[in-house]
Image (cartoon, rainbow, N blue to C red; front, side, top):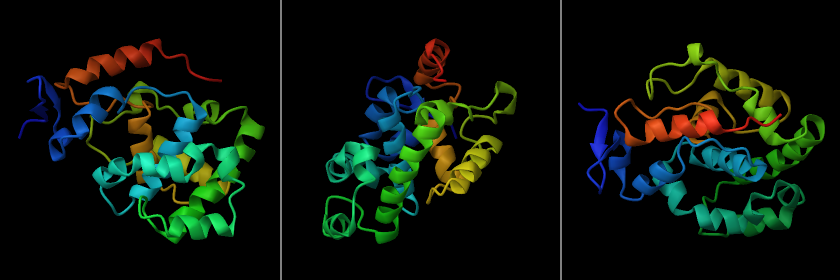
Length: 202
């Protein structure tokens, strides 16, 4: 089976785009392009934790609802959420109403505030775990990596929740810490160029 599928413009994309029409835009505009903004990094970690056991299509369809429900993932604001906010979120049909995951986002927001105070920024911290080229597996051939295991372990040590190695690897794929577009995908070269031009935070 080919690793690619033609998009609406007949150019090849990673095969997973074929699972839903809305994946093409997400794939072309977001997935794999490097991100250095703390709020976006925090949002993606949260959404990946919500995805655990579900499909990305479900989460992507609800993403705007998640943003409204969680103060657009301003972790300073989310860290101040209390029991009334948990109760509100459990009644919000626009998101995934899972108490453990909701409470994990609030917990992780507080941990993010601590991490920024200690490390300067979430971006500077996360990008220290970018794998070296020689440590990369073939695109889309693994669901974890040594780098995702290391980042997951360190986050857990700092008190983060729902950040297992598989969740963290999906985060690293999406946020551009690895270029996991397959060789024949039209976006692979675009992402590689964006990664080359990206100024690593530190």
